[in-house]
Amino acid sequence: MPRLSPFRIELSREERAELERRTAKYTSPYFEVVRAKIILFACEGVQNKQIAQRLSLPFQIVCRWRKRFFYERLAGLEERPRRGRPRLFSLADRHGS
Image (cartoon, rainbow, N blue to C red; front, side, top):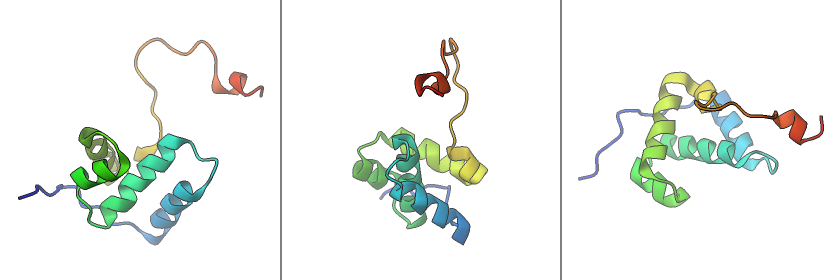
């Protein structure tokens, strides 16, 4: 019997619209699209294992983003500072801004 996630996702109209916008926007970074798809599948009742298979992701990654969204909503899907050595250049430098 498959184990159900304790992090049941229910979206407000605004959250759903934002997530759908992220998945449809051609210029969205890949990580944004994938995270939005994880949450959209989760709110449809799809289990983590199935989401991982559909998106070709490790099961643990799906669990992480579902849990973060459950506790932090859209803000939980944003990038966070990473540990380790800081970047030697900013993304603005890379794009010529």
